Image (cartoon, rainbow, N blue to C red; front, side, top):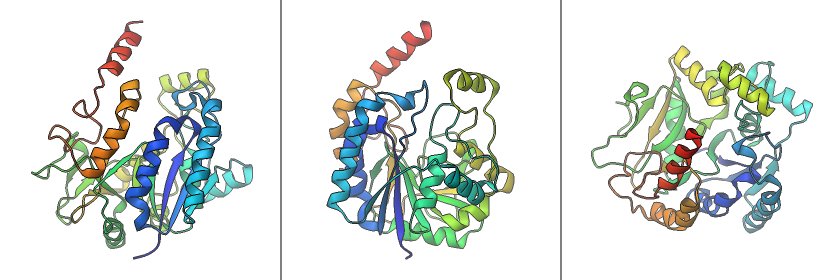
Length: 319
């Protein structure tokens, strides 16, 4: 197996969950990699959910990253470089020299995804967003993912199974976007890319989907972006998805041999979520998942009661 970099994107606003989830991610995945690259984005978006409590959380996040890197020599902390020189280099590498936006229309990460891929020491990279929970803890999954990428020229990336596995081997979701992969037991071929978690051979990724081209967001999102002071562009995963559809390419999700690897995504932030997060992490690491959660990539009410979030959203829409 080739050496692998585990690359995780972070920003100061992530601190309340990252202080618990980041050590969890390292426990589950660091034993299988040769480098851990923690990419910290200090370019603050304007008027978006990606910029909350930035100044308050920035020193806390920096202290957390310092403590983690001091405890493991494989951990490297790198700040996203937005200099014109680096932007040009990334544009040439991934976008054929065309525009590389700093952020998407929501103020979400854009430049930083490609910076993280390029900054990895090894060409095989497992990327995670800062809020992803990891179950299974397989030490063999990455070797299998590398083999699948090498064997299939129509494969862009691999991801762990989305959600804890079901006994019948099915997954939830819109069946228009995926189908069982007959070549990989328990695997699913997806027609769309996800930037939450992906394993790539960086060289093959560039060859198979590049060069990418930045695209404007839909008009209403462009107006919101301009009003908020953010760039008016669609998120990067949308660009990769469009390329996949156009070229007949796929992403492969699979659990692998027992105990396998799977992910869980907490889609909201609330007082209940932060209160339940230590227990949630413990249950993910032990595999203690209720049947109602199995096959679901997002955390369901059976694990975290999201009623406070739904009530707040309903109140906002009425207002």
